[in-house]
Image 1 (cartoon, rainbow, N blue to C red):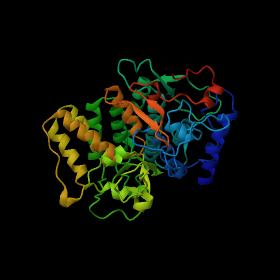
Image 2 (cartoon, rainbow, N blue to C red):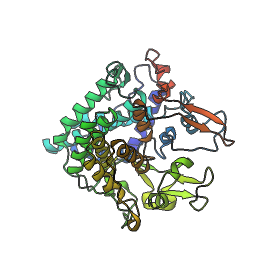
Image 3 (cartoon, rainbow, N blue to C red):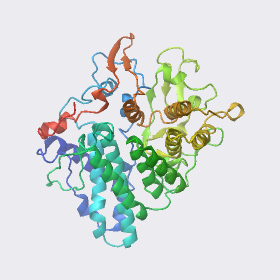
Image 4 (tube, one colour):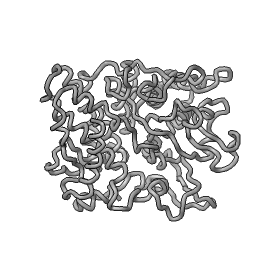
Length: 456
């Protein structure tokens, strides 16, 4: 099964490159001939292909963020990483290569759709089990569409979301199906919210045995993300707290005993996990923003100058080198992400008591106990800023920073971001409200679908 699924991914790439213009999202659904029993579908959802996080293996998507530094960049940018780092219109210019990000998400969506479409007719197993597997596939598909929506659709704006185009919403794995047009941002948000709420009753109550698999808490956590990036902060807080209430997951205390394995499926803080190898150079401004007693610095970041951070290029996010148990970064959801969502949403509602409680529950697990001082303030904007800073420290390289930048830019909280070459010259600029905050549809897709509208 595992080897076959890798072949499916390869076949998907071929279809992207050589199929007719209506077929760029599809792969031949040969899984239908192999998946006969409910157990087959269960194993299908347990495969490593679906364990992989955003832009695996090392999440080049992080290079869109303002906390990454790439001092060795060539001018002009040539590699896909350099093109991402400089917010180039297209991260892959070769039409003979599969489109970055887009191809990855739709390949996984096809695999999830295979379960959604076929499991009801599988042999053996109970009706309850079939519903559970179908609900898991809908949850996984929703996570992939969350990324597509926030990569290729404009940042959510209630005034324009009904007109702003996102991506095609595909629910079939039939290669002969005509691909639908790009749905609007509002349409996909509502579809995902409806799908997840409908799936929740059939999802497992607990995924502690393998936190990559779906659960009710996992669905609530993805709903929290959706509402959060739609800037519906009341619903985001509600679903984040439901995720926490319905999960057995707990934060890892950096003052205490760390997990015995580097496999995210068994890390206690994971709610609905996806794994990538953590690796990125950091800007001096970012690494210097940590407090001296913040344990994350010496557990997750390497330093070439004894952690003085005096020169550019002296710091890198590289947990594998420092604390191997954290080799894999979670691009899925976690306890700390849900607490940060709940904290920020509560602060925005001026419920500072709840906001500070969630904030403290995170920070006391990240700062040295002997020198830890609980943050306190009665000024709403100060609390919001402190939570935003904590969010940037706790979730720096799991693929969310770019989405946070988009969200904050809509609220006029983002300044101009510059990129510099080795000589310190500016080689790229991202001004506030730039069109670059929405990725262009890949050229590989448009080459087979010339009528598809392109983003600015």
